[in-house]
Length: 95
Image 1 (tube, rainbow, N blue to C red):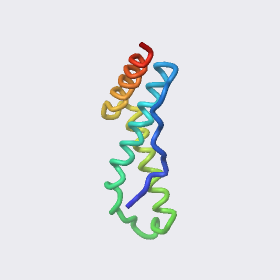
Image 2: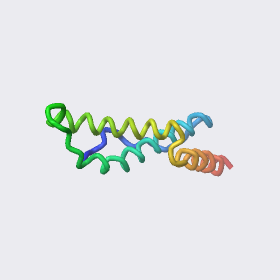
Image 3: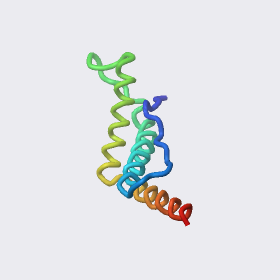
Image 4: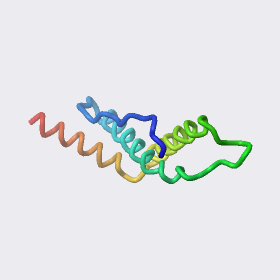
C-alpha cells in the first residue's frame, strides 16, 4: 500500500476569502490523492523501465500531483464546501 508524502492541511483561522479557498483546495488535493492511491497500488511497471524502491516513491508523488491537478481544475466540489464552512465557522465565532 502506498503512503502519501503529504501531510493533511490544517484547517484553522484564515484572514481572507482567498486563504480559505487555498486551504480548501489543499485539503481537496490531499483527499483526492488519498482516494487515488489504491488505483495505482497494483500496477507493475514493464521492464526495463520501472521497478525498485524509486518507482514506489515516484508513483506516490505522481498520484499526489494528480490530486493537486484535479483540485486546481475544479475537483469534486470539496474545496467549495470547505471554504464555505471555514468562513461560516469564523463568522459564528466573531459574533
